[in-house]
Length: 246
Image (cartoon, rainbow, N blue to C red; front, side):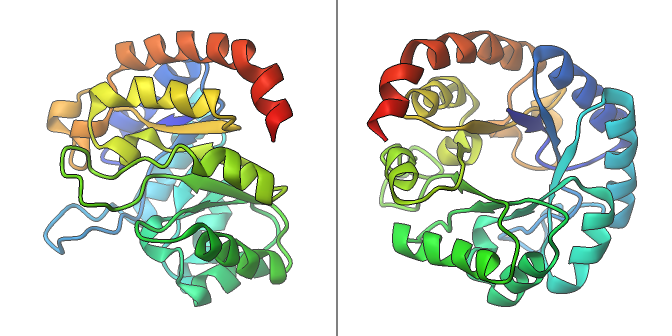
């Protein structure tokens, strides 16, 4: 489970969250130093100072760090701090960026499905990274854009077992972006585990009401602890049948 704030805001916010998610059982700290936004007036991250904060949070919590990279020229800088690089949904077909992360082979890549991408397009985007020599790619289903407006995206639960059947790559799920509502994250996360997901990436914030980005889909520490108590039980219950099916 990768967990943490959507955006790195302050040292205190990030370190506090890192310690909390580590105590609850998370394996990796997520946090955005660079953030793409639909609106140019939204918070777009702290940039390199955010990377420094993530490094301090890693030391404080003992968790490795995953963060997003936006441009080919940022790859070396982000890879110098992060343990895993994320390609966001908006950049799934940024082919220059896919080439750049493929050419560096020290860091694994989490590739998120584009908001309107087909499964074939998703897999071919991953192929760009693999073809450049980096075999360590993790696919992330994060929901797709449909006509439905009650959720931020429509989470494609069927994509998880389908991707596991079509490829050897690990598949994780992002129910935070997949639903856009904090109260839907818990049930959809459990559904993703039941469908065979190898991992989850969850947004967690010490005070979602004042988050600079995506607070409405972020879990509080208490809600994250409740989720982490439920996930292992679901995984144990379905692992034999669900994994055998794919």
